[in-house]
Image 1 (cartoon, rainbow, N blue to C red):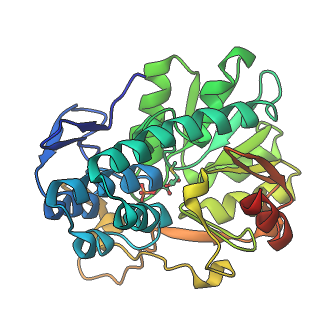
Image 2 (image 1 turned 45 degrees about the horizontal axis):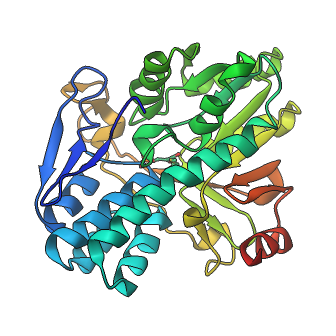
Length: 315
Ligand code: MRU
């Protein structure tokens, strides 16, 4: 594994500070659930499975702290899934370690299933960051890219406005691993698809509803619509910890609204007029009908719907 976003040290949790990437590699140390919750809120650690793992270790640090951790971010269900598991556990440290190890194993397994769907020399478009940084390791959508390396695939990374996870994190991870990667702004995706320059789109997920609707990073829905228009397969890669069968469809998924200053500028630079009204929903919902298949550690659900998801979760 090349990057270690989450390091458990027995009495403390070290989180690679993803706000500073790609320029600086440094770790933030957390010694309580409150500090882990703060790190999740501040985007030190982000990505659905990584948030779940970090929260689990947060519970170990404070022998509790469920409430503060549950309030840190609302959309990725992995956080609540991990807290629920920790709530049932007798040995907290063993359970948190298991959540972490199982996430890596799930990503490797779904990577293999996904790789079977990827053609030789495929130009794979992806969005946000779904790599080792967003998980305990290997990655989901980017894990499929990793597992497909032998096929000489290339990546087209959408920069992912406004937080730039694609530009800062995915492009960096690909370069670290020697995976050929081309960075584009989000608005270039349709143009490239219309020219036949994209063979497949693979993205991750933050929450998948019982009917197969998928919440993922803002901009994913637009990519799915474009992919359908241009006959490009659109796959979603996510471990079972991202499924939320209690939510009947995507309209019920809570969508995080983030601070406006992420839209009006970046770090110290501001480009929008002071006082302008801003919206900043951090996620959107892609209806199941636009999804070619959902890839998880148990296999692939093609053309996902309520029935397909129910059978997958019961298997
Ligand atoms: O706001 P973020 O960076 O936490 O959003 C991350 C995403 O939307 C990812 O695509 C998703 O969590 C899947 S990561 C394996």
